[in-house]
Length: 354
Image (cartoon, rainbow, N blue to C red; front, side, top):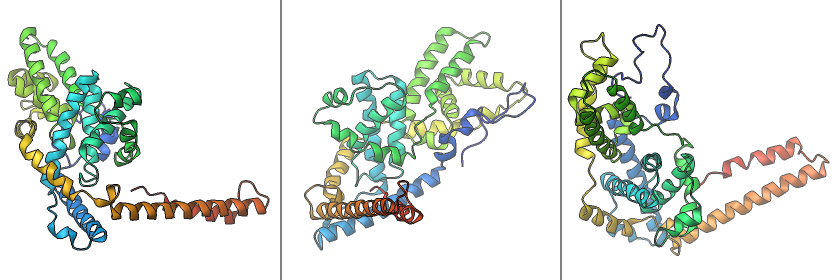
C-alpha cells in the first residue's frame, strides 16, 4: 500500500538480525496508510453516499426541495478541509502550543474527513475540537473554559459536543508519528558527517522544516512514512546533504534505497503544499450553507424528527434496562440471571452514535 522500502523498513547494515521497526507496530502504520488511488476512491464514495443521504433528508424535510440544491463534490469538500487544516497553525500560534500539538491536530482533522463529510460537520467546528483533543493526547492540556474564551463566538459546548465523534472517527488511534521529528534526527545525523558546514546545514534544516509544515496540507502522511517525508523535505532544501546522509546510512549500496522514493513525495509537497485560494473556498463555504444536512440543523423538521427518533430509542433502551434489573431482583440474584443477561445483551445494538 505504501512506497518502496525506506530507512524505516530497511535493516541496519551492521545488524545480524532483522527486527520489526517500532513504526511498523504503530496504529498509524497499520490503520492509516493508503495509496493515492485508495484516497480518491474513499473520498468519492463518501461524497456520493453523503449526497444521497442528505438529498433524502431534504426530501423528508420538504418534498421537492433537493432539486434546487447544489451539493459539494469530493474535491470541493477536500478544498474546504485543507483551508481549515491550515488555520490550525494560526490557532496554535495564538495559544503558543508546541509543534507536536499543531501537527497532531492537523492529522486528526484529515483522518476525520476520511470517515465524515463536511456537509454533516463543518470543518471549523471539527478543527476546534481536533485541536483541543490534540492538546490532551500530546500531554499539553489547557482548561476548556480558557481555550473557548480565547476563540470568538465559541462556547465550551461547541468544543465538547464533537469530541467523542472525533475520537470515534479516529478509531481512538491518538498516537501520531510526525515527519518533523524524523527531520530532527536527520539533522543530528548530518552533523556527524565529515566536511559539513554547520551554517549550510542550519539553513537547509530551516528550509526543510518549512517544507515539512507544507506537507501537512497534503496527503503525504497517508501514503509515505514520516522518515520518507522528512528526507524528501531535506532533499528539497539541500539535495547534496540529503544524498550524503543516505550514502552514509547505506555505505555498501551504490544507489541507496532511501533516495528512490523522494521525487514523488517532493512533487506532492510542491503541488499541494500551499493553502487553497481563499475566494474559491469562500464560494464552496457559501454553497455548503445551502446543502448542509438538515438533520444537523436545529429547528428544521428533519432535525426535530431525528431528535424524536433518538429520544424514542433512548427511552426504549432505558425501559429494557429497567426490565432486566427487575427480572434480576425478582429472582434474588443481584448480578442478574441468564434471562436478565440476555435482556441486557439486546441493548448492544442500540449503542451506535450518529
